[in-house]
Image 1 (cartoon, rainbow, N blue to C red):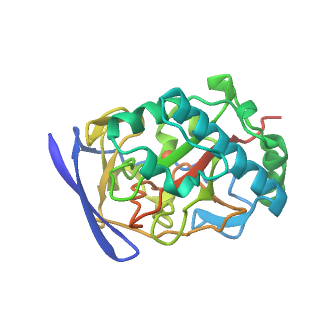
Image 2: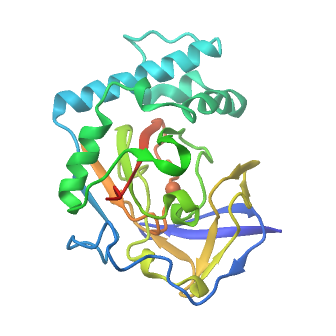
Length: 277
Ligand SMILES: [Fe+2]
């Protein structure tokens, strides 16, 4: 059934069409309040925070390696981009059709950490120190680390729906990490719903996993259409380059529309499970 997903980002209304079967859940809270990876920090109730992730040279190295990966993905699709003159923020001037964009993201969706020039375990350690838990980059159920480049062109529907990653079993006991790489600002960075990890399932209207379609694309994560308190109200924490947005997998996030007129947004997402002793 086609519905209109209406939401607010920093008080501005947005809407887009979503196809799916929507239902209210059971009276249960999926966010585990005992010994959660966020249990030891003062912002547990908010469900998210921006923290320092990199020293400048390390951030620049990571940014360069994302650029190299995207240039290679363009080359694979017969689009020439020169490393010197190509700027990630201009991606939409090189990729001018949805079909080509889908080809590129089919590559950036299936990367390994070894494709990037950065030390993922150092990052896991750094965030572990902040949270007071040992983290690992290895996701047991998937038998690998998770790293994904997200690219959102201006004036596009390059977004996933508002959702929680925690509905997927392998993302229940992790911390979500969102890293700005290029073009991330107050008009494009990832929106979240503060405190929404504490909303019980009977107050959430959503689809099943793989049950929502936007603009012809089916998403792995369920789409959350609204909560008992009505339309979804999101804010953009807007971490700066070199910082990371850390958040609970049960925090509602997504719908990261890029409102910049002429800047592509590029970000990186990682997920760090709590290390089991
Ligand atoms: Fe997500």
